[in-house]
Image 1: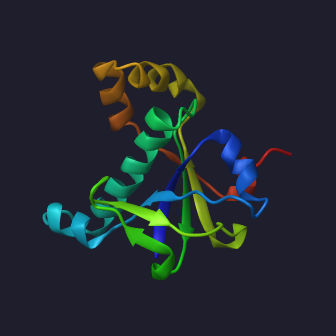
Image 2 (image 1 turned 180 degrees about the horizontal axis):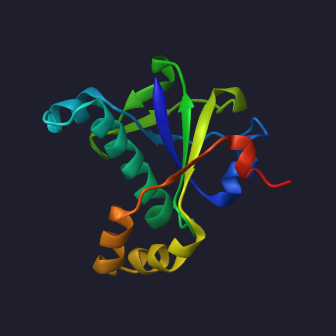
Length: 143
C-alpha cells in the first residue's frame, strides 16, 4: 500500500537511519474513496498527498511542506477515519528501501507556510494551489 507521510526536513535524514517510526500517514483509503466518489484514482492520490503536505507544514512545523511516499504492507497501515478520510496509522519503523520518492515545496514557499501556520487564510489558499516537486530520496538527503 502506498502511503504519504508528512515529515520535516530534519526527518528526511532520520528516515535513512532505519530508526524512524513516523506513526501518521495518508493513503487512498476506502473512506476517502467513499467521500470523494467523483474523484478518479489520480485525484484521490493528490488528495492524500495534499493532506500529508498540509500536515507537514501546519502541524509538524516544517519550514517547507515535505511528504515521503513509501510502500508498506496493509497490515502496517490501519485506517484512522476520525482524523481524516485519508489518514492511516503506521506501525513500526520505515525502511529506507520502502521509500518511493519525496515531495517537497520550493524554498520560496517558506513565508506562506509560516503565515498559514499562523492562521493566514490567503497564505493557506496559495499553498493549496501549489504543486509539490518530486525527488528521489537520494537527491534530498544532506551530503
